[in-house]
Image (cartoon, rainbow, N blue to C red):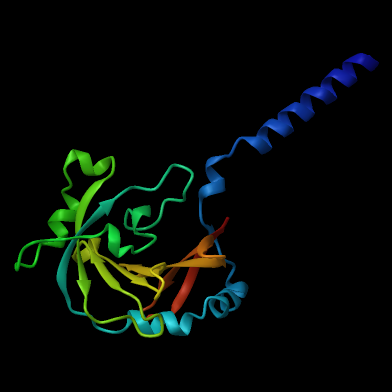
Length: 203
């Protein structure tokens, strides 16, 4: 009986150890922010500055062809089929369309060729107006209900993007000459662009 208890205990420890090593799908899912904590979260990301940028009107007139790479399976699925290649706006990796015609961003984003699904190219539209408070590029991918508006800081890192009635915010930490992504928040907005609910994930 004593040996049976020892064997049972060992098996339980093995199962627990294995479960902590193998990630579960829930580890990469954004979780609801309790309403009593939402105000504190908004202060932590300086939402007032984010709101100023998203309520401003932008003219998107400059087409650019960029790399389109989906996120890896261990990255949370974000609204609007967000591709991780847009986490950083690197001008050296952007190819300017040699045309004077404004490209239809919606058709380019929603009807990619098979190569794009594995990591190809897509057309986005760039605004000549910088985002207030962040002083970075403002980019549009897609159109109508599928549209993403992406707002970058002056260093080229994605601060936030809008999709329908949501804004997704990225929390970065400066490490030497680069940035580390600490977490992501997705906020549901009312008609005046104020958050009424949110989800988050921390890395």
